[in-house]
Length: 187
Image (cartoon, rainbow, N blue to C red; front, side, top):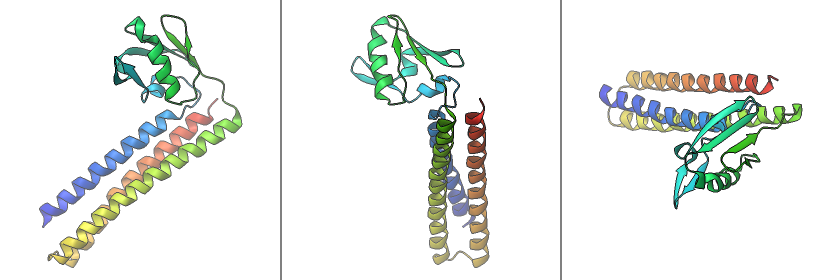
């Protein structure tokens, strides 16, 4: 039975890692006023008919704290990259100089910063819901093992371990939100 319990714990950790990774990607999309190549990590580009990640067809760099530069490896890719950035609906207005693309980030107003903090917290809550759903599935598996002969003491210990794992991941989400909020509100 302990082997099955360890499998449940491992599966819970893997599911929570996926949830946390997704949360981190969503959080990275929320710009904090400073240019970062990570802002464009979800942009897909039509590369000769195949949807391809922007990072696979161009170099993405920061020129300064408010400007991103996208340098395509092939000059012919400038227009598809422009289209990909616009289609990603990130709120950027890319500028094409013929050989590369510049993206200037506008200054964030105080209201916009507060709105971004709310969005960050909302993403955190979605991630926590995912973590709680993973916990619910694991607890359901413990109930099944209980009906198959798992002792009451082992079941209680397993439930406590599942809660400990869940609390650890929830804390990581809370910590990430605090850092993001600080980053957003720093001028």
